[in-house]
Length: 284
Image 1 (cartoon, one colour):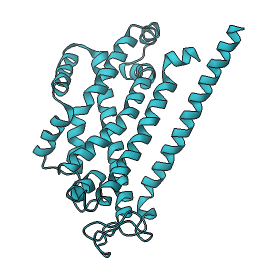
Image 2 (cartoon, rainbow, N blue to C red):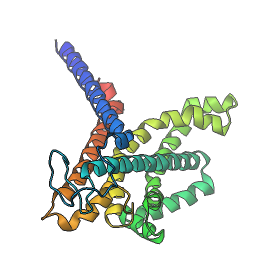
Image 3 (cartoon, one colour):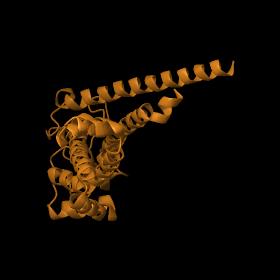
Image 4 (cartoon, rainbow, N blue to C red):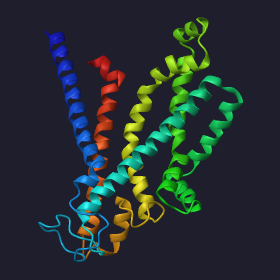
């Protein structure tokens, strides 16, 4: 009796996790459709200064206008596009670079491993955002330089994960069998090490999207990211911070855009982590 109840509970848990994953995937797809087609969805030209300045939200301008007479809803949509695509590019860069370095260090070992791990120790020794601020300031700001600055300080996390996974896989029987069958280093990495290390790396990348979006927005807010007149959510909040009490919609709108995007990606990342967790799979 108790065994059947346990099996039923496990099945319910598994179905619930799958439903959550499907729901958040659909929500993310909806967000990405808005991001990709933002320039076609926005009701007005986001850079057109043709309206009355600082109009409150209305039927004509649901998010109001800014101090230059630009439609805020149009700028929020285009700013969301800039923020999300920049964040995805950043996460893609640090995932590929960090994973490549970690797998090579774990597989080759020796002086290369020691050198790259000491470099990663230096990057991890400083608070990430403070280190990125210093690098972005040296590069004179700009969105591309902000991405470079965050990439420089963020890759060690992925390198550490990939290296630990590689070291664990090196001692397995099927890796030894693959070596005996004549597989080259590249074949070992592509066929065996990378596929078996992908789970933790994928989960980390999914959970990092929200964090990287906040940090990119933070650099733009401080004047070291996207520069005017580029529509970017952090930059828009920076431009309206002095008007929070008098014209709050100028800063609340971009803030809501960042909040919604970060929440969606974080919820998707949490669900993917639960779905891929081997302990949950065993329970299920």
